[in-house]
Amino acid sequence: MGSIKMALEAIMDKKGRSFLTMLGIIIGVGAVLILVTVVQGYNADITAYYEKLGVNKVGVEVTYYDRTNTIDITDEFMQYVSDKLSEHTVGVTPDIKTSGTLKYMGNSNTTADVYLGNEQWSACNNFILNKGRDILVTDLEKRERVCVIGSYVAESLFGYINPVGETITFDGDPYVVAGVFYQKDGTTEESMDDMILIPYTMNRVIMDTDTVTDFTVKVDTSEQMDGVMAALEDWFMENLNTNTSSYDITDGNEALTASEDETASISLVLGGVAGIALLVGGIGIMNIMLVTVTERTREIGIKKAIGAQRKVIISQFLVEASVLSATGGLIGIIIGYVVSLVLSKAIYDLLLVPSPLVTVGAALFSIVIGVCFGLYPAVKASGLQPVDALRSD
Image 1 (cartoon, rainbow, N blue to C red):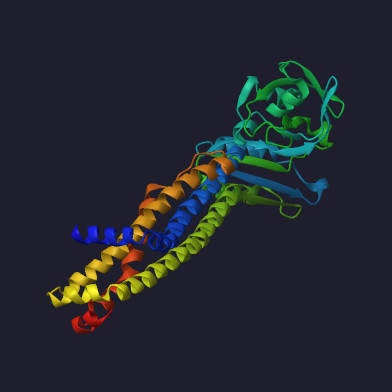
Image 2: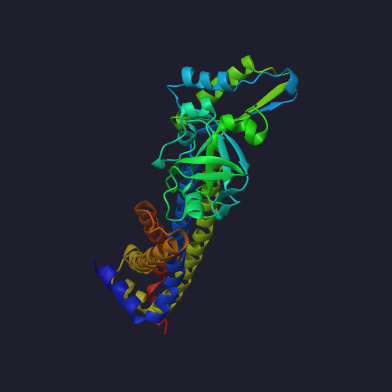
């Protein structure tokens, strides 16, 4: 306690110099916490986006080179997934996408994504019904002209009117609104809510073909993705004529995984930059401690003359360096927390603070920096000869 008290007195005796010495540590620790929080917010933002899209999805695309000698595998493929892979999947749906003009009375929408799918499309693509009903099997079988619309389409065409039961037109053809999905992406133009779902059996009317080439398979958990993809690979190898057709199976989680890897790389780079700032702060502490040793040479000589051991001198200067860096670290943590809250709210509309593990790590690292860079001046001070020290002015 005596060494800490002496260190605080020495620091308070030269407040301005002490603050400038701590500034590098303050900036370094604050930067570490702020950058980690910004990356954490970025990662949360990206993860939320992909969760809205729907995770654990397998995309299947079939390409037919010779349509005169190909057999449509749509029913057989979906039946296989429903029967053989039901323990590992949520559902399977054709996933056809097009565009056009939607109209209701005097209102129109030309930006909506128009999807053609089955009764499992919403489950496969992470849409939840808000009003009315979803697409039914009977709609598919009877080729009913019905649709389920996203919240932005409902807002842009109907305003405050309940859309369920109303008739809209898609490129001039009438469709009865059976239901409305909950908002999932901000209800803005060209968002995920700017969409409409129509039974895929209307493919001939809309796309002028009965052939379905794109499917989505929703898997229960990410751990089951590889097994389901392997099973799909085997099925296509056995059932698709590779002389006239080809297929492509893609892991829908690849983009999320790549984003997480990118975030980890960014974290390392930014952490390295902040680490350099801490090292610069440590060098500043060492320089000031060397100046302090020079200024207090006579004091050191007196202590050694009355019997102070080297370890006492070393501990005194190490404690002073550690207190400097620890104080700078504490101020940096406070600044880091405040700026992290402000930036995360402004950028991501979230209230984020550095994790306790990162905070403790930054604090300990600042102390280690003080000890390491204070060691040389402390050893130099302890090595002074009493006679030479006492002769110093």
